[in-house]
Length: 143
Image (cartoon, rainbow, N blue to C red; front, top):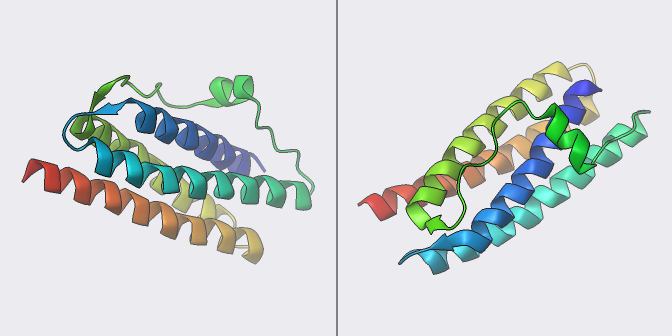
């Protein structure tokens, strides 16, 4: 159950981080970055809900409280405030890389539970796609 709580925490943190970047992105690539992030926030929030509901279904008690998320956070706070799109996209690229790896690892832990495994695997596919979107935006800005 702790692996699911870990992913719940990471996805809650990711949704907040994405929204923070959405509000604070600046520069000539503001509009494309700003509009790309919001659908990701919505999708990640849906992932959070799916994991929390799965946890409850299998007898867990999902904890979505901010204090718990902060206490269990294994990584540093997102480093940027108001910043240029390239800076935010580069930082988000690192965030997504970590979340994708951890989500895949959690999916492997649940190979004996096909429903949870499938949930995490499907979410991993979407997270990888969002990671790719970020990478493509970074490349296009740098070109």
